[in-house]
Length: 543
Image 1 (tube, rainbow, N blue to C red):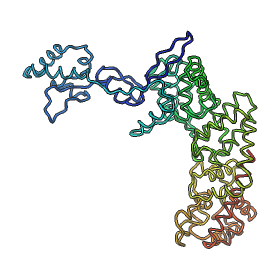
Image 2 (image 1 turned 120 degrees about the vertical axis):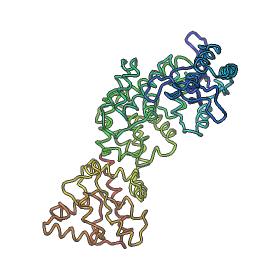
Image 3 (image 1 turned 120 degrees about the horizontal axis):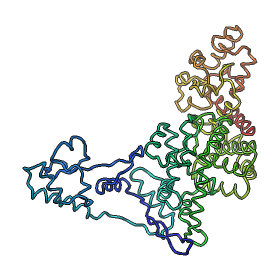
Image 4 (image 1 turned 135 degrees about the horizontal axis):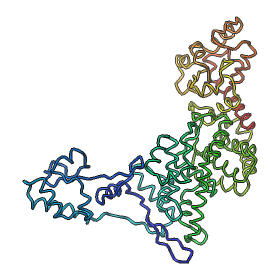
């Protein structure tokens, strides 16, 4: 795609670069083999790929191979075709060199084959060039549709291509920052590769801005390049559609329908600011701490990366406005949990992000959040819709994860324990216990989707879980009460019946649990879902 020409400061039009929409692997292979150009490998190290050619190959033998040690030792192979194709080596020189190593070969045949080899460079390669006057949505749609056959690409990939192709405003450097940050986040040893293979970048402030992430082990927030772009873009531009970002980086003046250099320059500056804010160690770690303080202690409790991204963008916006940190924390935590409970970004996320960004810009986050709470988090939501959301067997259900976060935030004790907390068990991979044991229910004819309900789950110590076995609640609760009364504490560390009742209340267990068996299971689920929903409501309003 020929980038739209932009109007320069002197009034003339620039000559737009071409962005490769499809065919990167082919172009890389051809430039490496035909021109002999060095390419970057997965470790960002420049390497030269040599293609060898066998001019006397028979029909069942390979004409071309990637050169290796065995081929280098075999005189029938021309070890590198690039010098012949790019004109560094003439046909007569190549023929003479080959004949020295293969004196019994047919010289005329070798010359003919070498001429055929050189003719490759004259072969036409089909190229479809998209006109610069096409609107950005059309080009983006073409980009995505073409790439649906192989690795499915997104609008964000198109943005990354656009950024990488820009040298005038430093887009290529921004691309490196994004790419390297995401690599370092997943593999700290990549830091050594950057230092060895990209020494120029390693000496820049941009490297210093991202290199700290190599020393961080926290796994709560694991953004990829799409997430990084999303946060930086939303934070700085208050927009949601990546296609608009491509247009802005092309200098698009939406009102006058033309491309202007000053708009492109300003857009790259804003994107850089957004990325620098994202990469700030202070911002990043404070945001992670903020989310953890809301009870979402690790990645097991993170179900929506988009909600997390928007929360970070909102955090950066509020920090830029110099709001007091306690106020920022209150607003960001409420927004994040609200977006989870309402599934705000589960559908067409770009549209929702676009709407929310503009409403926050116009009304302010405080007023807009209050409006959402009034319309979407009314009594009907807490008493009915949220209860229905908890009718699920999925442990990544947003409502259930918010329930667990509520327990973690309050440092509540785990089921039938007076020492271990739910938080510690989640961190240490503790057992999820079925209040109505699954084997017990299975033997009573209940299906997997019925006994694996989130309203049947509690976190407990493994030893407790094992000792409770497969008995019905009305059986094992009597055993527990006897264990407490006798002060044996063989099953639970809880010392008194009052503490037991308090523990059951913490876990939203109906008070008549000691009287229930399989016949009461469905009524138990209904009752517990209501109690869980009440707990989530208290949790949200405490943020």
